[in-house]
Image (cartoon, rainbow, N blue to C red; front, side, top):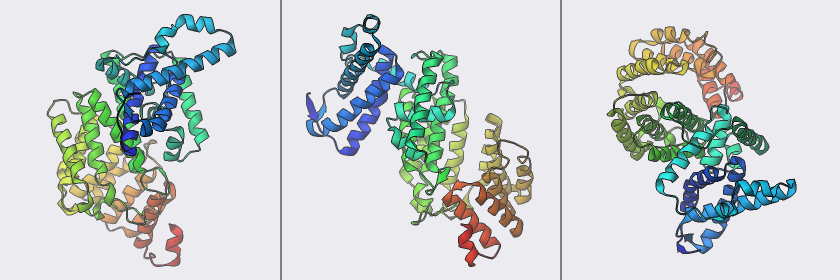
Length: 430
């Protein structure tokens, strides 16, 4: 190894995670066998993490990883061939000289295509959304199965089975490791963006568990979206998604108290918001909006940007937010968009108007029974001065969420409105 420099532990981890999809993409493109290649890359990453801190980072870290992973893959193929007595057939299909060559001469364009193709494979339509998320975090994000399982609060064995099934589904689908044509790429890119969006949202507000956030997931979603923007620098929606993530994540420090309890937007200390992330998000959004066609992620980012412009909740430009939600509902109709628009309607036209809009969602099976519908109704009822009805809905919402910080916040709101915040029963409700 020709060691040129050393890195801090954090910088080394970042380097390996950036290189992981490039290395995996190179192997899968050359040899197929997605699952075997992924295992080989993971082994190479482990060896690099063990050796590079002592030996230094090689001149060509990507080539080093590809070489080690290739040798690991070939060793595994030989063992498999010996077990199954078909070594000659496999070796005839894949020349040994090609397997053992270190593909350090792959040009940057090939790196880019491999990485993008890998992301499209992980978000293949044959996979369920949970499988797409798990495989993306594993193969593209470089997270271990244990890390992914911990982030989603499921047993490691469960996540391992999910990832294994995803790989088998890809194999069974006969998916080729190539970039799709333009029309198909646009459709598949929408799935990629949706997966990254879901990963970020799970990190920003965990759906279950004792903590409000899972910062590791939101950080990973931002990192992967930055990476995707480097691959597709002219795509306005990729830029819009990154802007949305940055503008939203900028509030992270203000969203919880030292004890981990939830702080709603109206009560947050805005001096804690990350101005650097806000400035970056606004710059990305401004550039994306100037390119012409406006998509849903750009519109959501624009809404987030309007919130960041207000120094206090009372300074919020709700008419502008309402106009943006109305446009978003036309571009990407969704019950969650309508739910959020109802809040903006209440701020502009009064809580009664917001409640009327909210009532249209009660028959929508995608949202009916969801705790956010009850929580939003409770908020609007509280604005309307209907304290008892608001308390009932806050309690109902608290009983329907799996997030402990949300449950405690909603139960506390119900108790306060019912006048029992200081009673022994209030703590029990949390």
